[in-house]
Image (cartoon, rainbow, N blue to C red; front, side, top):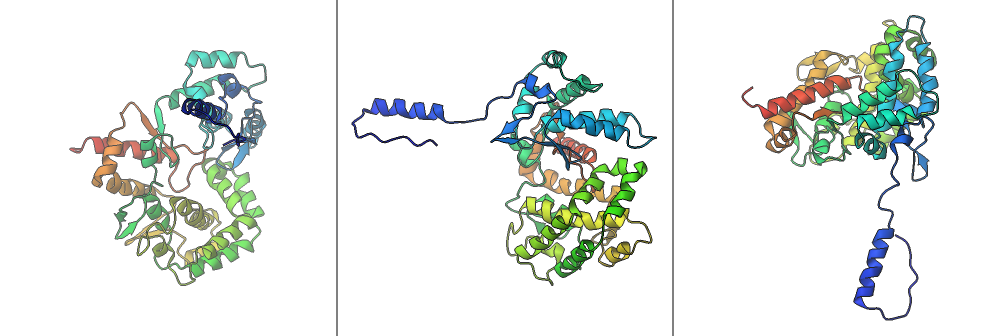
Length: 397
């Protein structure tokens, strides 16, 4: 709020009311609106609080404007001799969606969904800058999708969208597979650690990863379209998280939380004497990402790579839950999410009521800056979420 000079004079109550109204009207309640024309103009850089609003492909390859995205798309379509040209169209649509469905600035989303498809066509038609083939069609597809969808994530502008996020904190806790957790996210990430794996073992494994040159290892994945294309997010995730500074960050987080070497990694994430010891975000960014690094390195390493045996010795060759051993990238592990949601949305009345209240005309979606998930790809996640809603609305089924 602005500072105002104080004057030594008597004023009436009416004058004070007028002054208060003037102050309220002068407050910067929201950032300036973004026009539809600005959204579709490739060179536009959207600013918020003086900083560019970025978007991403595969969650980690960031851009400030659509015009910055175009050369990346062209390079990817020429990357492999046998690459399908449809790659470019898919990347264009994903880039536009990431640009519009921003995690940090909803003004672009507002501009897109508050205009008609014809107004969108007209705005694109007057763009004077070069655009790739299919530009208008990609924008129209994104607009059509999000006029009839609800983005279910922890910072959703909609309360139901927030509640349907795995990150939503459950005050009473949720009982899953013999233990109580603070949210469904806590179980999902904790399950990636074997019950016997300790914090001390994690520290040792981080040190092993820090002493390896990952460039040749990642280069092998980059060169093989059969590996890279279906696993692009996982490869970019590993490139980001195998960087020395990121590995040091994981190690620092273990120490920052006061975890002891003998502490069990899975047990530490369960609700025991203390509720919400770790936030849902810490579960994803710290516990989840660290486990994903170990599981993915095991998955994508060659059979004779010594790192595979090292990780298997610490039970990162699979997910161990109850008496089951489940492949990390497998249909069986993905289906675990559906089983978790059966408890939250079918057995807990307050959550069942929330998911049941959303009309079937609205599709439940989950979109985070074009990020995916190697353990459960977003399209599968979204299908599960819509299936659970159907079950919640039709108990006889």
